[in-house]
Image (cartoon, rainbow over all chains, first blue to last red; front, side, top):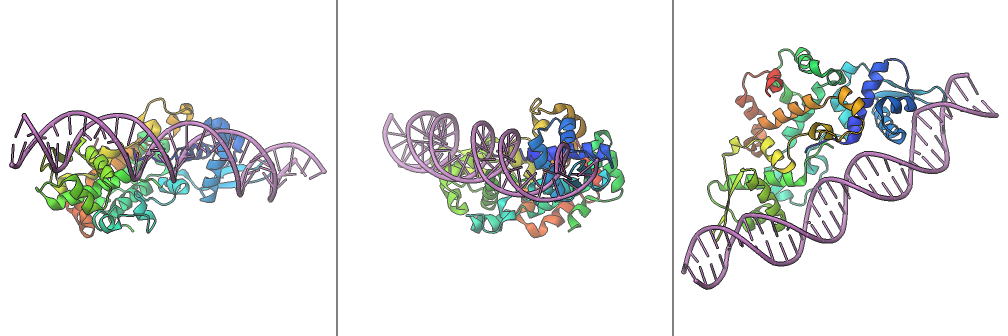
Length: 156
Length: 156
DNA sequence: ATTAAAGCATACTAATCCGGTATTGATTAA
DNA sequence: TTAATCAATACCGGATTAGTATGCTTTAAT
């Protein structure tokens, strides 16, 4: 399945709505209306987005949320990390002593490289790409015109 | 977290042990010994691996398991799919009517492209790469020497 | 044919995670 | 001051997952 949490998905939906609003602040109630999400769910989503700096929250009367950066500057990696923490396919990769068969596991299997690859992929795709599916391929192509697959690995 | 299930991880560990054994069959008991996994767990893992054709099971006295293909021919995508089904980051991508906010979700957010990208990455990395972390980067580089990132997307 | 080794299938349980909800408190503009 | 709005915490039910147990079927060596 290899799936992300629903909250992460909701996060993208909300960011999309905020992207459409641009500089205009949207209240939680408005976001709930536009997305079809329940208010408590919206709060949870907004908290994660605000904590990670992807949206800017303003309290008080006539407060609300607005997107912190341009859609092209928001990477899917940022969103995923905001809701699920660092990308770690296995527990071994995240924690240190989480594996009880360390003697065979840590020596033989190595998911670290795959982790890096997926991380790089998520870093390449922006909210802008997600918003315009038909342009997704084109946009990725344009953003890294002559980049070979190798670069995906060489980067940090 | 974006993590895979433990069984998938165990599957890689077991495949690694079988890869070391080469053409020699290993019994479930032997696999349990070499990996440190409990027998019932080993059975679960082996069933998934055998069903997906990654290992060949032989019953009866002196039976056991052996790897079905060379490690370089076993993609991580195969292993992941063997345990977790097709790669589907969101429920929307897998099922059809799983989403209760379809009106906003399916129109705005689009994970399909990311799905494809990750699928391609998993298809590029083989068991051989995982077994030899230090050679992982080099191996991926060799296998697709002059392939640009674009090809990752263009492929189905 | 017998027998023992080995895989196959099913069911069950405990633990964990996740999505959703409710409640109360803190902050700010009007 | 007041009302609107975000913030923080705690809670609950359902779903998934990992691990275990049990009995059955198949195969190969004798």
